[in-house]
Image: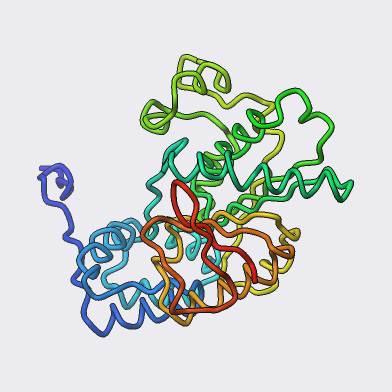
Length: 292
């Protein structure tokens, strides 16, 4: 009689338990590398998500996995995999439409007018924590709407970055499903997307303005290489950081922004008690922060 595998018997190896000590060692390591603070209430989620990875690697414990992350020859590629597993990439085109309308109707015209007066037809936007690309592509579409045919006379670059290689791969591909377009106005859908058998492809003229890069916001040297920006969008990203890391990232943004440049954060994110580097500007549709 031949032997039967555990899989055929329907017996699967259980995800190992994540002890408090292992959780602390793992989250300390993640914090040191990325600045992302994982609260204890997410221990069960981390155990589930990373537990599957531990089994994939045929390891018996989270301690084995932590050693692998720190010391194995594959530690760099595994760290990227870890970042994909612990970050949540919930996004869509034209998300938070009130804020984007405020950007289009008040902030963008101001920037464009100032540039014209200076005789500089250049615009630099940084989408920090761009996930799978919906935000920077949306900004590109808004610029096309605002400038229309005159956009050909402008030098526009949107730098988009994220810590996860897999979401950046999807972003560069520029192909999206209905879920990504759930908050997209119909006229924008017909104007800036090409319907294909497998989804909706972003129009090449929209893609042309955006460049994607793998960047960790905790990496000082990498952040310094981002071109100076007129506007930074960093929405629903700093919620993952503790106050110390938030201050560090806000300092990066301050140093990157041109004089009187603007910083857009998510609706639930407030920085008034963290720094005096930016002043809140109240506009119809929300708050934007301006470099002091």
